[in-house]
Length: 239
Image (cartoon, rainbow, N blue to C red; front, side, top):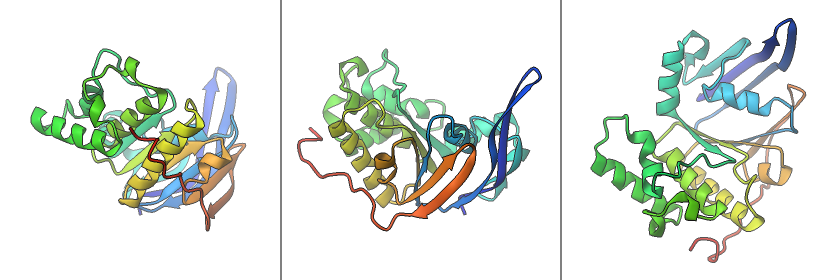
């Protein structure tokens, strides 16, 4: 089991005011799944992603990642797990404009024991996989939104993480670029990668194989999709 969550709770305190965000959620995620965590703004889905991605800690309940109780880990241990086991794709891309496309992709490897030659080799392979081998030395400012998100996807996978979290990855994209990004994520999942997608859009959620629907900090449904959205094959999308 990759992820096991039992009665997970999260609350935030501001002086005497306590805001409860997660009220006790439970689920399992197996290695190789493609799961959407869906819910409206304020539902708790982003808070849940932050806990699952080691960016925040739960207030109560149990979170087991690869048979390890996350609550027992120190901040430094959480940071180490996050850097080695987790990849993130954000709505705002989070690319560094003073670096080239290739340098952005290989950035997570800088503090690893990977040689510069191996870093560049891995980065080029991933950029080719997302259809951007012709943009290696471009500045991110010269890329379209869809291209920026494809760079972000390549960067998220460069460390060979155990799980990828995609937070509203199509939120800043037009429909054509959104199809393209979801096609890449579906293809990467078919290769065995675990992907957890966070979104408020039902049509985006349905590109996954399973949807966990959250409302007001509680799971209201958890379903396997018998018929999911398939991102359209279109030779015009990747050029």
